[in-house]
Image (cartoon, rainbow, N blue to C red):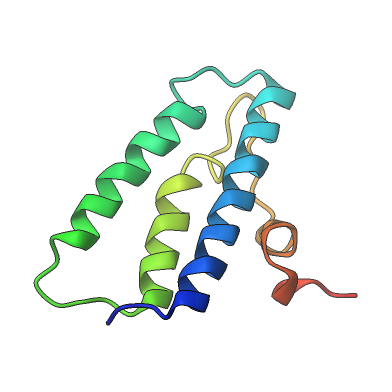
Length: 102
């Protein structure tokens, strides 16, 4: 199922915010490229190729979930005494206004 133009634009905005958040986190903690943004984008590209070659089209929400999981997969790891601790609520609030608690 193809996303509507609005869904696609919203998904791209969420992905851009997630990538910016990851870049900021990596810079702030001096994370090298073995687990940094370039690596995350490589994993994202693999996931996007898998989605595009799926025999059955996926819902746009599933595609976005897969793309976010690929991009942010190392953010959840605990590296160097917890530098990459994941706080899912904070992350969602940061990348999508829908999840803000104000």
